[in-house]
Amino acid sequence: MSQWYRSKRFWIIVSIIAVFVMVFTSGRYVVKCVELRRDISALKGEVATYRAKIAEDSTMLENLKYDEYIEAYAREHYNLQKKSETVYILKD
Image (cartoon, rainbow, N blue to C red):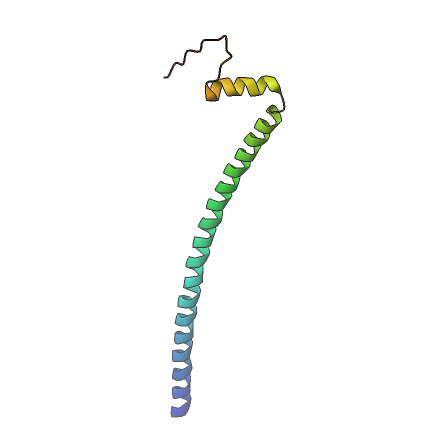
């Protein structure tokens, strides 16, 4: 009877230790999983930003095929003018 009690006590202690080891081991992976999910959501935000930038650049590239657009773009962004024009730059 004494040996059975020791054996049962031994297995209870081993089981408790095993449960603690499993909780602490899996706990690290849970934290790592949460961090990875946060990183994934941040990267998805970057993907959306870059896709919007690609769409904007594609529109710009499409518009640059036309000389009228190139002239208007140069006038607006680089303050270019024709020889006979006077340009007034108003800053906000």
